[in-house]
Length: 79
Image (cartoon, rainbow, N blue to C red; front, side, top):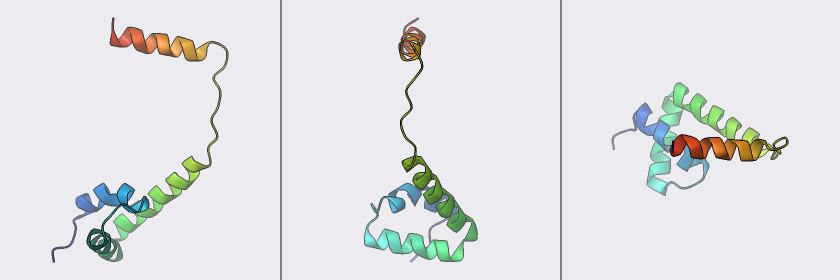
C-alpha cells in the first residue's frame, strides 16, 4: 500500500481531528505521521489551534460598528 505524501496528509488533518476518516484512511494517515516529523508537528499545531479557538468567547462590537461593517460589505459587493 502506497504511503500518503505530505501534501495528501495536510489535506486530511481537519478530517482526522474531527474523527471523520474511515479506518483505512486513518491508519494510513497515522502511519505517515510516525514517519514524518513535519506532518506530526503540523497536526500538533493544528490540534493546539483548535483547542485555543474553542476557548474563545464571542465579543460584542462597539456602538454601531456591526451595522457599519455590514453596510461596507454590501456596498463592496454591489457598488
